[in-house]
Length: 468
Ligand code: ADP
Image (cartoon, rainbow, N blue to C red; front, side):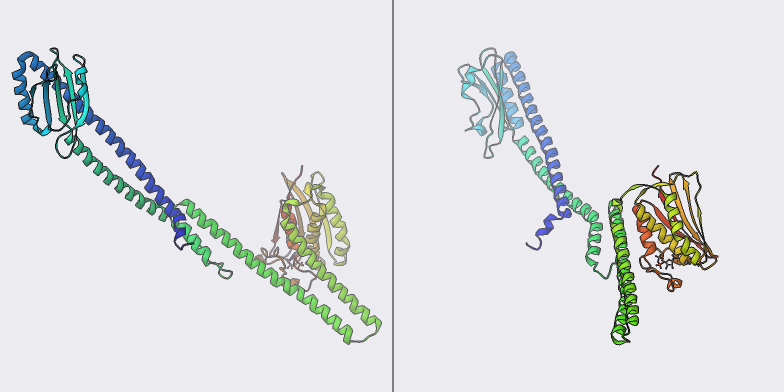
């Protein structure tokens, strides 16, 4: 493709072209219309003049005779110029009875051959060519008088032609000026409107994998362009945070996989190089199996989060009475709470209907993660409360503990994948529990929030819409 071929495809070129075209057509139409009106009006004025002349000369001939008419013909020809008018009176046999100075009109066939057929008093008008080199058009009119003679008056239309010619030149100049003005205006408007789009394009071209921080400067070309720039910037913002998140997640995955694999390798190495008693080998094999289970668990949880996030609209739905689901969780965790020296309590108003629509296994998993955390992060002697209440069409399930709490600046981060608090390192876990819980709640159209009190203790609240 030729390098500048694409220029004709640009919006700027097209707008300029259309502006030119519209201006040209409109101005040509206006000038053309005025021209047509002018030409018609000039022609009818000329015709009218000839008719009046016929009446005037016929009256003079009737009242004052041939000699007076000849005198009047001479005066007229002298005042208007012999090349401008011709005046003739023919007898019934078409013999000339009186005439103005016809010398300039020599060679012009201004009397049609069928004039003998002209009925009495009828006026006939026709177009002919004028005298001289320019061959300007001329207009003639004839009338048969009462005595059978024929009166002919004619006038050259050279002045009208000149006037119309001047008008045509003025029109052509006007159309050209309008086309140029239209083109310039179209180009200016298009340039102005497209400047914002070009800014977006330039920024998009500058963006590589490393400089996602680039933003389109928002100009003042108009709301649409500003909206485009803002939408583009918002998209960049989102891509930038996704890329950062992706980078962090892959770092975390690498790190979280490396530790257990290193441990597995160490155990396998010591099994090869260490004491070969069956008990020691069995113990190491058991430890290897445990590490492998942890790894498999980690990978399964990652897959489950990805699947839940991707298939938010494909959650299997059935009506679930949350009261039963929470009771199951309470009973499930009661033994581990006792072992940890905690009191686990359940508080659900008996009169509230707590039916939601969703996947019971997934919701069970989310609640279990929250209760498990509450138990994990609450020291011996503390208290964990599982509560639920209904407000309008929303049901709120909250898990409150009197545990170590979460620093305010960490609250927003606890739901990130692989995020683990500093004080959690001593606890088992992989930093995916809350991420999974949030994915599940969101897939059910709900929201999960974390609160923490300065005095210690946290609350995780899940809001779900009721099914009935
Ligand atoms: P894990 O528990 O495996 O570390 P989670 O995703 O379940 O991962 O939790 C992420 C982090 O949030 C935890 O490491 C911990 O620091 C913090 N956290 C979660 N629940 C609580 C809680 N009830 N009390 C205090 N901190 C908590």
